[in-house]
Image 1 (cartoon, rainbow, N blue to C red):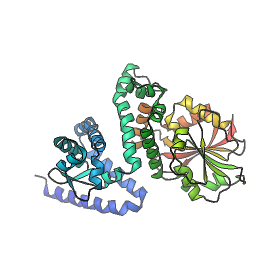
Image 2 (image 1 turned 120 degrees about the horizontal axis):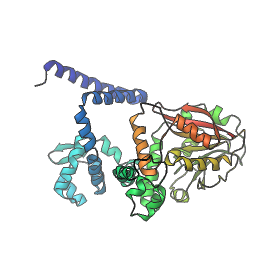
Image 3 (image 1 turned 90 degrees about the vertical axis):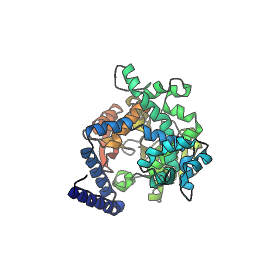
Image 4 (image 1 turned 135 degrees about the vertical axis):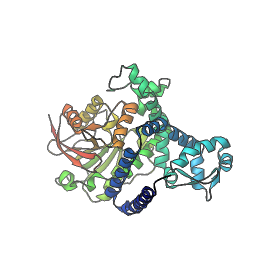
Length: 401
């Protein structure tokens, strides 16, 4: 039996957390702080053995969710106006009754679904949110690529004698050694599968849509607009490898009257896959491993690109960009994670491992960013803090060594 006094205090704490969770919904900084405190409390309360067992069991729930996704169970439950029994789900999806029951158990325990009665399920905010194209597509593409790469990563590292992954071939190629499209890396593999490419682009757009924009936290006039050339033939900003144009469109919406063109550049397959793009944005097919064709733009902008590539490839991309920049006028803007030297938050720390497994690349500390940019001949002007959890805007001028 639990101590009565402790039980009462635990209940009061639970009620306080519920109340606080409602109050912080409109204050993102407070919400993240409360979440951090909750995670710290879990790390204090969980015994070492419980932590180890949780990590050992961690692949089970994602695999169960992927199976429910693939059979069509997630969308069936979310779209249903009433809870569905396992038998009804079996009729809709064609899956075995007992299989559905077993797969749903961890997902109910995690709050992804709610069990309203024995073997009867309804959606929760988590499963309802999962059906958004950016998330359901993202879950599918990352499960198909990163999960398999991570599963084989320890075998790959043992095979190399536990050498650091500086460049491909890496864990991804090792995991997909029988797939000819994967031999040249993740992106050629992705481009060979139109459905996966669509899922990936949806993931990137959704990921960008849910993050704070750099121009809401830094002095845009000082960095970009002051001194920008005016005229129809001038280019203000080029969003390089900008996917389907979320960042470019968001910037135009925020600054509709800025001088000069806003250009979106990406691979032909990505540009051709765009369903809608604001007419104010100029789409251009471009491979950043070739010289930048648009000369003298005010800003050459990259968001979440360099963490996809090892240093050698990053230097090539940077040098191709530098060749188009006008000295004393053009700027290079990079919006990426900048890891702290210690106590890295969990999300970017896990993302770094994912980059190693999937792309033989990495998230970088400020020191690693400075070294990389120095290799490419760039002078860093400033690291601008955008959000507290390490995503920052790196400003570089056109002074090339």
